[in-house]
Image (cartoon, rainbow, N blue to C red):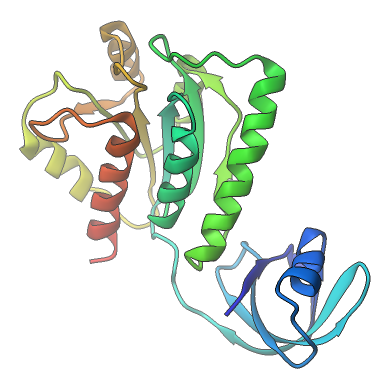
Length: 246
């Protein structure tokens, strides 16, 4: 079943109004017709609104609400992935897969060893692209909300964003002791906010790790093998998903 996201203001009693680019997608790409059923999430309450199409207009699709499904599809903890900027199109892959695994938000971070350097214009274009990928992945994985992709920031700015979060982890290749990693991840409880800091190719510099440690981050290991930047964050997300949805 096709899924769409709307603002809460577009759900009006027993009627749901779909606007924007989804109208063209419904009419000209999916070629849906009145009477067909679709699924709508407003991203605010986590509920699925199952609707039937009443009318397809030029700029809006009018749907009637059939029933509401209250099903917890979101992780019970909010996980923000602070991802060091990787090369090429790896960020697109990271955003897509992190969304499928339940991430709450992804924040691109310009670290010292990041090869990619983005000026303000390029960063804005990239962020828009990553946000579109997040929305598509949220639809595909039937998420109740579209995770936010933040603006590219420095590590200091990222640490400031994470200041009030309950658990802050920074996988680091020089860390040892899988027991500590296990303890930290399994300690995450429903309702908490979690920050995961992942370095780019080449990892974090030691000074960056010390800066993160001073801000309350706990350096952890992800095992005896060196993981690629596009793998490390997904390993943490999968582990958190397993523990929180057990």
